[in-house]
Image (tube, rainbow, N blue to C red; front, side):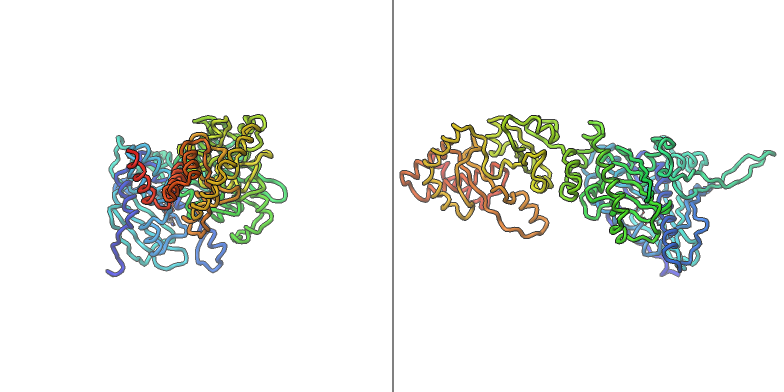
Length: 630
Ligand SMILES: Nc1ncnc2c1ncn2[C@@H]1O[C@H](COP(=O)(O)OP(=O)(O)OP(=O)(O)O)[C@@H](O)[C@H]1O
């Protein structure tokens, strides 16, 4: 029946990824088998779970397994499972499309990266799954039937732009994927995937821990010279997390990590623990060595799978790991839960909450004990996420503050801990100074830092968007207030300087009153500064005002926030400011004075990397002034 066959186009992003696979940018082609086995294993997990939850589902789960079959003559390799299978719509939706978040970014990064090794790394982070088959096959056929449904679906493609889907009457439940193999090519790392030992070796290396039997019929020489055929299970099927730590070697942990994390790189650290007593569980968790592309995407994949007595229950078990540790990957196998447990019930469960608290403590303790080098890697990849914990997890504030690393004016290259900052604090210094902004260069050149630098005070340089928020929320470290250099009054002066400042305030009183009026639309006050040594002016906030970066951040998120007027501070030793005072005293031209005030305010905004409200007006006034002085 012709209406049963359809030729469809791959979605644009899928097509681009396939191109990469067909032209095989990834040198380790063997991994295609791991990907197929991994998908089959997930499909078996799902059918077992569905049959437990839905008693009416017509499905035989007595012999769930994966089968590998080769045909040397036809040069095909088939991976078959009797798992959940896919409906026709699912085949089109799941195989013809890439719904994964981060795909667009991945493709953009791949286009921009000229270096082959970097491309491999990127694609490895993303995990190409089923498409990896096109590295080794020039045609792939998939036959599948969803558990509980009558008809099946046959899908086929050469990986070049289109695929066909056909409804078929009879297909066994589950999925079989048949690869029409490209010729072996040792130079291109394309092995002969019809050779028994090759398959055996790949399965052992990548998929030994898979909890379902992976079977293959192998040939054995019989006694009389004839060959006999026999079915063998290729994997040991041992759930890694249930084994004692000293019975698992590094290579096994790494492979398991790749399976759960869909990451082709090695983990940074492995945490294998067991909870005993009233609520028993085993946990095998990993800290990745690099951030996934979707780390900051709300749809991003999160880390921990929940099993109950070896039965897979769910991916992304958010009840077990807080959002700020979403990069932690792994498995928790809880012994005393119902198989029908739902996400909502898990969130409420007292014991699960206790497990989560222990897991969090363990992860934080592991991070604290990482070697300096590993921690550096960790912090550069995940620091911005861990700092979210300072907003989300008040119970662990202290531990989290000890994990924080920040750039500082103390050292141009090395990050510092808060503890080390405190130890370096000067005599009489009671506060921890920090500056926030988009990048180090802008912050370092900002006028706000001048007096701190001149007087030798160390300032932390915070450039992650979350920094603005956590410093406010936490407020202090080790009893020392965290104080922004761009907010409130700064008091770094000696008594003598204080006296001088009081006299200056008298002198400048008229100018300040007049300027506060002239700039009333833009600022709430004009005052003299104690933080400037070289710049004529800067803008600062009141101690509890929202900063411009935060204002921008909220607006970008679509939130309406009131515009916060800031304070303009003048440097009473700068010739432009003293000159303005004199001109004002002598009752100079009102328009010219107002324009000078505007220029001062505009320069202060520019110096901190801010935006002018009316850049055209600023430029015109400036150009007029320069022209008059030529
Ligand atoms: N053997 C199978 N049985 C049932 N569904 C499958 C099977 N193979 C693939 N699928 C479905 O197709 C989807 C896409 O598979 P694919 O391997 O491309 O990506 P993935 O497994 O989701 O992620 P990753 O790329 O990280 O491995 C799967 O999520 C699954 O829903």
